[in-house]
Image 1 (cartoon, rainbow, N blue to C red):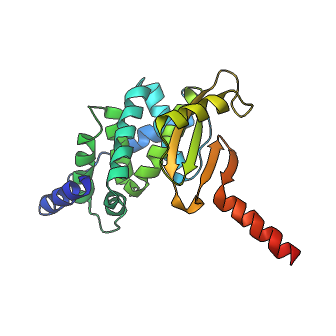
Image 2 (image 1 turned 180 degrees about the vertical axis):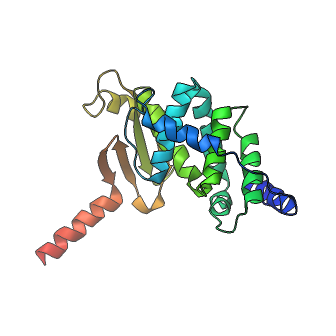
Length: 227
């Protein structure tokens, strides 16, 4: 797992002299966020959203949006497979040497040489924000979906749904008023046993709760109100 590799790299780098992280990337992203060129298509909130928006603007200006999106998608997949990585990146005891070693290790997993992403990771490290990386990956994905005219649809079920069922849901929702004309659906399936059964469908900022747990909650409320 990457967290083990990072941990070993950090341990190996500890005795070495600190490698100074150039402050230029931070100034570059700050400048990119203030211009009108390459502005994000939607607003995303939180500190991770601010960084994601700055990255989008910088990647747009350098014509590297697609490779940057691919690099962040690769990093997001690592977080899904390695739960300890987020904890390691958020450790308050990381030294400058540790951060430099971590950035170098993360760069190996971005899928290629991308100066925009490398500068961005160095900026996060310099600003003690490596712990935001997972959130930045998620917010950047939202920005890319909006720029491509995609509407995100998240289907939550008690068990994983097969491809045929997801395809039928996508077809049905795509024809509804929930999706604007000319928009494309980006479907993901999340598993949450707590809903017991049924589905919870989130399309953009709308939620359709057809779960068994929601029905039980409504029934309990009705009984309590009656009694």
